[in-house]
Length: 130
Image (cartoon, rainbow, N blue to C red; front, side, top):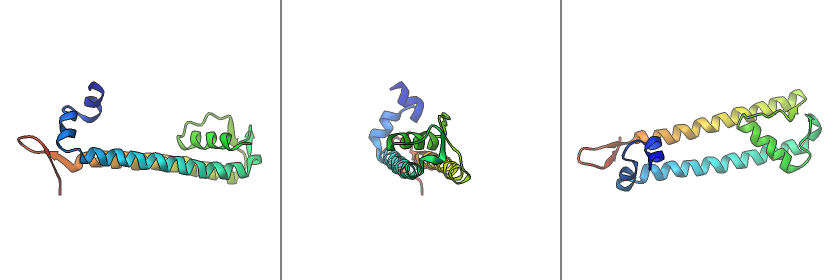
């Protein structure tokens, strides 16, 4: 319970029992974002797999390697074991990294926005802001 209190604020379990709607919406947004991350990572991986000779020093020669590179790029970790060589692939990889940052920003905006929609009311409980 200490973890939830630090993340969601003091009184989290009671607030969730009183009005679980903002938390359901936040978890739903998280699920949608994870599915979108996976779908877009697979889409970019398919593109990378189609042009493996555009990368170095090692190449995404299998779908698993291409998916690995895509996820590493989208999360902006960038280990450097697979790198784009041509201008076209550099633009593609940079756009994937920007897309990953955008997806994270949207997720955080949705999650934090849901918390601000509901305010505590005197006597217990929460109500939705207009």
